[in-house]
Length: 448
Image (cartoon, rainbow, N blue to C red; front, side, top):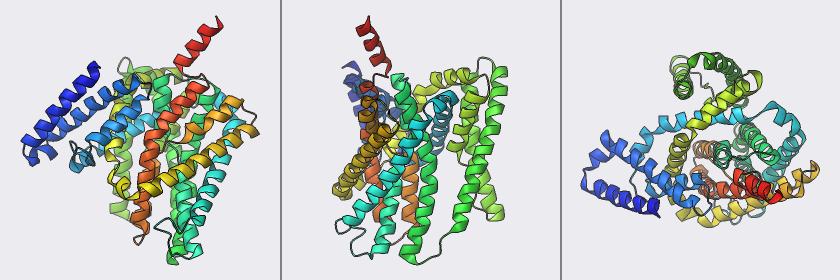
């Protein structure tokens, strides 16, 4: 109750300041810092309030961003959000270090069959299921009405590919918050990280097919080759960075947190600078993928050096402010107005995706002989979408100027809903299989 009271007080204070000060102050300099500081504080307080009713803290961070962002109360302007892009990228690369560090080789070997079968079922069932459903309902969805079958297939396949995407950042945040540990947690994390990388390739292929079907253009093989080169370069760079981190961890002393944050900043700026340099000087569109690079680096430190545990301890000590910043900005960036125009179709698409995700994970669990409680709970672990999904939706709007913006609006509305309900579902699933710290303690007490 105390946190809720403080949240109300500072919200009224911020509302008063936002309305009393000139607009120029609100979007530049001190105004940006003030708005950002308020949102972070509000996100932390709201998360604490929601934690009292067993909701995930990241749900509070996201909701605070949505509430105080440009789409609703407007305490954060679009200009301020634009200025915070570097902070958002920095937080994402830091979380990617954590995702890679959590992937232990022993765990992957132990859960290999379950991870592979669940991943295959998710990709096939969700992609085919969502694509087929939109084709059958193409007279309902506004962007497929009147399209010939082949063109409608291309559009439906785009939706199916984006439906496959997950959110490693949300999964890592929930696992960190609940201190979850066990085979179910390992399986969900392994599938989530692998699915995010695989989705990029699937989407690239389907995007090329859709361009051929809709506009008659040739399949863009250079686009596919370029993406493959970027992925390989990111993986190789991640391996090198991982070994470099291991060497430097032994010599950094007590400032390990600053060291990891500094590396995340350098990776972000270097990737952006390299892409800008190659584009301006040579006309080459090539950029390293910071998230994949940092995931690989974290994986190398954990599995190919002796400093994996130290690396994760440093990450864990720094995680709270990073998660607050990243998910609050993510919530503020969601375009709530997309729900105003697309909510009936967005809810339909969310429902279809949830049905196919549950069916796929249940099938994967049966094929890999997972415990029955895993089979029942696993569908709730793969609902969240963010990062990659939003980037792919933006690409759809750019590549298809006729119907792309409308389709992207629907996809963003769908992702916004999944971003809110997904963390709640995953936390509940971890409790169902008794792998949260709280559930493990309760189970231990019951046995004694």
